[in-house]
Image (cartoon, rainbow, N blue to C red):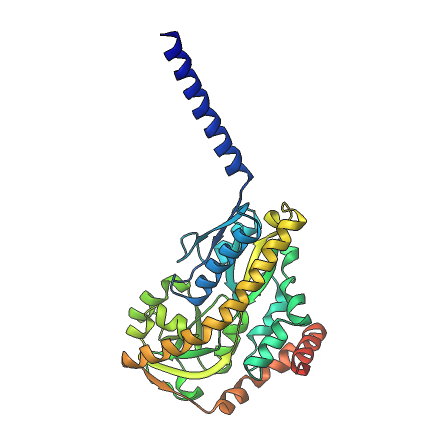
Amino acid sequence: MKILKKQRLLILLGCILVMLVGCEAKDQTKVIRLGHGLDTAHPVHKAMLFMAQRLEEKSGGSMTIDIYPNQQLGSERECLELLQIGSLGMTKVSTGVLENFAPELKVFGLPFLFRDREHRFNVLEGEIGQKLLLASERNRLRGLAFYDAGSRSFYSTEPIKNPDDLAGQKIRVMESQTAMNMVKNLGGSPTPISWGELYTALQQGIVDGAENNLPSFYLSYHYEVCKYFMVDEHTALPDELIVSTAIWNKLTTQQQDWLKEAAVESAEYEKTIWREAELHALEEIQKAGVEVTYPDKEAFREKVAPMYDKFKEDPVMKKTIEAIQAVD
């Protein structure tokens, strides 16, 4: 009997030891929560999964990222506010929304700022881009990398082939003053609406159209309501991957390096799958009966030219614009 009791005691002690070791291992693992508003099929979401995998590999399993897509933790602005108080570790937002927290990023909302895709990446991955990544740090939001979000174009429930067709149309825009000014310059009526509420707003006629990139238009099923897509490519707002400084400052230098490296690698990976997503989206929306048109971009440039004059009234913004235009 004493032997049995002793065996049971040893088994019990063994179980407790296993539990304690398990708890200790769990406590030693740094888990960062990342919330965003995109669909799980979106290339940016796939890039963030890649980042989580690379971080786990680099850290030997001591760091992981839990990702919550589809606005599970709130809209882009709400996620940013959660980062500011440290309730959320990371998020991905369009720089159009982020300009409310870092005015320097308004420059990305200027229509036709980049000459082409190569010029855009030379800016984003160069000295200018690295400086702008840290523009929001004073508001407890530290940029880690830019994700390719392609070019944004207009789509609507009504035919659109030139700027005149936008006259009077209610166009959904992000919570961005620059985006609102752009639509006003083109004759439309800008209407800020959360991305998650846009499908219903289009369906119910609250807005007539919106502007975004091809993969987002396709993956959001907006093509079911909007049968006209005009590839004017007015802006090329990148997405920005951000970490809360409340989280960042608690990491060791080694942990910060791992996270930054994983983020940069994921951005490079995302570039390779973005173009495929664009071509697939274009093919699928045309199959669904969407009329795709390619307008004369010069007509758009003329209407938004006053935006450049207004921006250049600010000496700092003028210097940034000229520096971007000077990049090869």
